[in-house]
Amino acid sequence: MLTPAEVQALVTSLLVAGRATVFALPLAILVAWLLSRPRTPGRFVLNALAHAPLVLPPVVVGYVLLLVFGVRGPVGAVLFNTLHLRLAFTGWGAALAAGVMAFPLMVRALRLSFEAVDPGLEVAARSLGARGWDRFFSIALPLAAPGVAAAAIVGFAACLGEFGAVITFAANIPGETQTLPLAIYAALQSPGGDALALRLSLLSIAIAVIALAASEVLARRAQRLAGR
Image 1 (cartoon, helix red, strand yellow):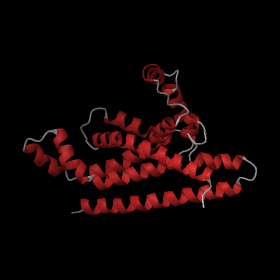
Image 2: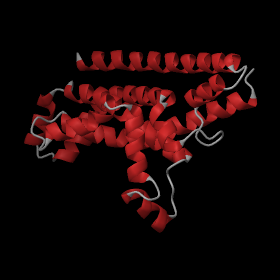
Image 3: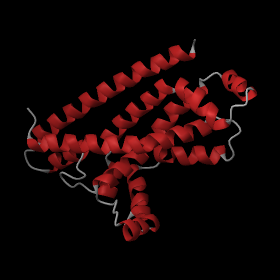
Image 4: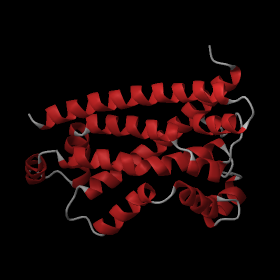
């Protein structure tokens, strides 16, 4: 049985990962689709920006988010003064940090799915007068649906495991921003917390294995669809 503290950390992790995935996935779909188009203007710059969190240290990403979205940052100040919305050191801020770190993984999975779509279908649709967005919603997106689901699962799992960016931008506040990785870190810092850290680690591993298995199933389905 899980203790109340463990349940709290699990619920916080699921909320943070869920929010991050819901808001990051639509943007990841758009960016991946643009990157799959050879004629997209500024494709190299867009690709570099989309994958920057993948190569930067998570602490650096969290610090940049703090500079931009903190209450004194250029974006955070506007949000706070106009909407009274504060992201830094909140659950929504933790979701933002986790979503930014998981974004490149989602884009990579989605881009492969869009590139697997037969370009002849879009050529035929274009010859029949379908516009770009019409081709996207009627051809590319439905055929890439398994890849979209796989990207969502991988992104969700990555958000569950994010540590550096979250603790830098959102801190380690129990019940607010303390996800499973942060709870493990806190347990290891307290005397006699090894047993709690072990239980939380096993819980994290179980969730990650389930998510990755589901992603693999969806990826194989996408390959079968692409091979038809």
